[in-house]
Every structure is written in C-alpha cells, then in structure tokens.
Image (cartoon, rainbow, N blue to C red; front, side, top):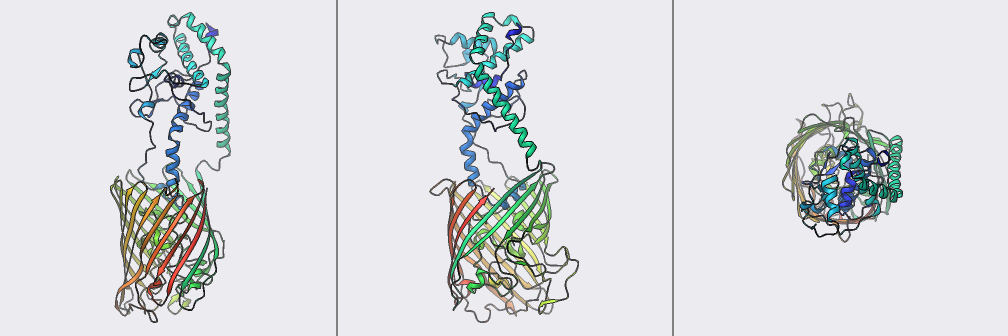
Length: 639
C-alpha cells in the first residue's frame, strides 16, 4: 500500500472544487497565519475544522480560498481606500477608536458547508449520471461540500488547478484512513483510479507546490528586508501653484507662486495597541515675524506681525518661516520635527496620549468632510471649526506640548480633552523685548507658567448618517492674540489695546455633518470666541463669531473624486466692551464672507490634483479692501 500514499493537499481546496466554484486567480502575495481554515456556514468567518491535513495541503487550500474571497471583495476594499482621506496626518489618527467598517462579505451562496449525505443536496437526483460518484465522495470519504441553500451546482465549470487541488483532498482523506488502520474502507479500484488521476495531474500538482514555495520564499525575503518590524513609514508631498488678485487698496496683484510642503510620518507600535508618531516636515513658505515674502502681505491683508490672514491656504503653516516660541527665523525647506506624540490604552474605554509636538486635531476627530490639508478644502477657513485652531491648536508645526485622554462612553459617544503648553521647554521668559511690552519669548515659558490651553470635544453620532462635535476651550495668552491664524485681526484681538497685554479666551463651537446619501453630505459649523484682558490694569473684552455651511460630494463624475462648495463668515468682531475697539482705526466695518469651490481628481491611488478657488468679500471685515480671489492648483503625492 505504500506506493498509494500520495502527496496530500487541502480538503478545503476540494470543497471549492466539488462545490463548483467559478475559476479563481492565484494571488501569490496573499498570506495568512499557518492554520487550517474553512468557511463558517453562518457568517463566513474562518474556523479550525480540518486537523488531519498536511502543511502543503493547508497552504494550497488557503491560497485558493483567500484568493477567491479577495477577488470578490477587492472592488469594495479599493473603493473604501480611495474614499478615505489620504492626508499624512491621518496616520496620527490611527489610534483613535473607530468602529471598523465591514468589508462586503461574500453572498450566502458562496459559503460552503460539509454535507453528510447526498440526499441533502436538493439539485442532485438519483437519475443524475454522477449520482453514485457523488454519493461515494460524500458518504464514504467525506470530501465534498454543498451550499447552505442545500444545492450542489454540479454544472459549473472548473479549472485544472481546482480539480488538482480537489483531487488531493480525497487523497488526503485516503491517507488518513490508511494511517488509522481502516484500510478496509478503501477499495482497491478506488486507489487505482486515484493513482491514475495523480499521474495525469502531476504537472498541475507540481505547479501548485511551486507556487506555495515561491510565496514562502518571497515572504521570507520581505521579512528580512523590511524597513522595521515595529515601524511604518508614510509620507505626503504637496506641490501647488497659488495666485491671487484684489486685496488692500492701491496694491498691485501679486505674482503666481510655486510652493511645496513635504511630510514624513513614522508610526511605531511596541505592544500592537499603542502608537508613537514621529513626524518630519519641510516647506518653502515665507513670512517670518513681519510676514515678509508671504502672499498675504503682498495682498495687504496680513497682520503686521506673524502674517495672520483670511487669505491663507489650508496646507501652509500658521507661522511660516518663524519659530514663534523664540521669534527666530526658519529657512525655506529646513527639516523640522512637527509631530512627536505617544498614544496608549490604559483600559477598555480609556486611552491616554502625550507628546512634546502635538496639535488639537491630533486628538479631536474632524467632523467636517472638508478637512484634509492635502486632499480636500484649499483654504484654512474651511477645514476645521475655529475653536480647534485657538491658541495655535493647528499651527502646522506641532507648536505645543500636550497631554490628554480619550474616553469612549459608548460606541456612539466619546469625550476627549487635553492640556497644551506652548513653551513648556523654556525654563524662564526672556527679559529682552521684541516690541514694547512683548518679550522675545512672546508666549511665555514653563509647562504651567506660559501660554496654554485646556480643550475638550464631545463627539456624538446619534445615527450612522449624522455626526456632531461640540467644542470648548479655555486659553491664556501672554500677548494679545487669538492664535488661530484665520484673520489679520487675530493679532491684536483686543483692538486698541497694547500688544503685550495678556488675554484669556473662552471659546465654544459646534460642527455637524449630515450624510444625505453615501455620496452627498451637508456640513457646517458655528463658533464664538470671548476674549478678555487678563491684566488688572486693563478693562477690555471682544467677542468674535464665525460660521460655515457647505455641500461635499464623493465620487463626483468618477470614482475616487471629491468636490466641495461652501460659504460662510470668517471670524468677525461682533461685540466689544471696555477700552477695546469694535472697528480698528482706519477701517470701514463690514461683515466679511468666504465663498469656496474645489474639485479633487484622483489620478491614481497615490496622486491627486485639486484645482480650486476661494473669494473673500469685504476681506478682514473692512469694506475698503477689494474683493479678493485666491486660486490654487494643488498636486498631492502620498506613499
């Protein structure tokens, strides 16, 4: 009998064969854990059902089964990936608790189940020419499967490779019977027939073994030469042309500029549940302490200090060309550490995070679909609620050291909070002055003594189509600023009050997104920032308000493409008290408005091109300024 001990293969492969599956494509790159798998009849999950099969048999089976399931699910998986925000900063959000979206499962008809009697197969009749053969395979050898709806579908075609794998399933079962001294169950004529089949399909069986060996060799090579066993690298490169017209009176139109921003993120996990994010970036935007060389200054719409402006694009930093901690300059395309953050779970519903270079957007999920500096809206105004940007919360340079928590109250409700300090690394404030009353370390010094913020967000999902975020922030600043970078009035928030006057801010806001359909969503936000002088010698207060509403489109004209149209009011002084001015000297007060449209073309999985423009009416709340148009052509590469 020894000559009949034939090479084993997976019983699961034969189940696929006999059940009449359509031809599958072998995918050598697919690997799963070395375990026996079969498809659960109820939910399609993998179970440990076959314990007597050889390693080669198991591997062949896995390739066929996984390849077949993958072929059916690839369109769904690819579409999900294309629709995701490809912003490199999203690597930071990998640690955020997210309810997994199930990949479209196979139809019920593709889930196989072992049958114990041929009579269980409703479409197999005793008069069928293959009835006796099926009966023997089912009841004598147990190497055939049917569908959950009690059908066999014996008229479907198969490939020679499928048949070869199925043949090995029965060979494996015979080996088992022989090994357990139950040889009387195996007829001599059956063994002869099987031997003949093995000889006829020797080439196919050899090819299958070769493919498995090739996959194993390739896997070993990848493991040996991978970047790191604990760290993943991803990156984003933005190259954009920006042009603008309008601006302050008597200003000539600025030149079209070509700018870039490059980011590399290293995400490391030590336990499989924690994440250490290290981010490096370089950019060529200019500005410095006085805004020299910035597009906003050329339009006459920037603040005289730090170049804050409503004409700022989404992907440029809040303080370009400047280390705002010390007012020292940063050269174009200098490499900077813009992200250093560690996230780790401490309980089932509680996650903590801390880092020396972090932003509010790292901890608080973006509710609006317009957020995505390299993929979605082209203006700073549209991406996030202004409350998240208070105190340099989204400076683009990892301005603050921060620590906080995420508490998942329920699958539809979570609470997040953080404390951030801008100059936590400085032991003391400089005595020198950059401006009267303003130190050359204008944001103070120390973990608890300088400018800082306490911020929180409650995220609520009452239904799968509705997302709501409620924000509150309490801030203290050593100087008279908001720290949002959204308008020129950000600097000198208390108009008519000295620049060196410390201020306290209480900011509240809400953001809502309602998905009317899988491809259309309405989104908007509202915000109010209450500013009060923190000096006993000054009595002044100002209230700023802002709102935005828009429509976001997915898969517009082509799968993977997105678009947005939005309109709103940038931050605007709505009320003042004490010595603060409602309208700064020399301005003609008028409500500002922002209109924006963009369309992102997904050229490939890793390249997108976004043309867009936004128009500013009464820029900076001053009707003396001309209506301003900023056009952007942004190309984003991700890897």
